[in-house]
Length: 93
Image 1: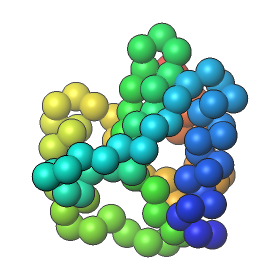
Image 2: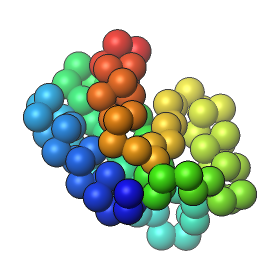
Image 3: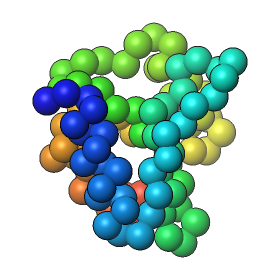
Image 4: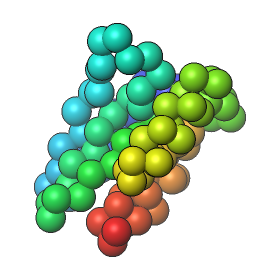
C-alpha cells in the first residue's frame, strides 16, 4: 500500500476521534516525521508514514531518537492495520 493512502487513513481516523493530524514541515530541520497527532486531553505524538516494508532513512532514525530523548512519542506506520492500536496507545499515555 502506498504511503499517501496510509496517510489519508490516519488523518481520517484521527479526525473521527476528535483530533487533528496536521502535516509537519520544519524548514531547516530535515528528517522530521510526516504528521503531528493532536488528540483531546492534550495528547501529542509524531508519526512517520512509510509505504509497506520501507525502512526509516538514517536521518529519520536520528530525528526520531532526538524527539524521543525530549520525551515525545514517535511512531512509524507502514500499514493501515497499525493505526487503531497506535491511536489507542497515544490516548492512553
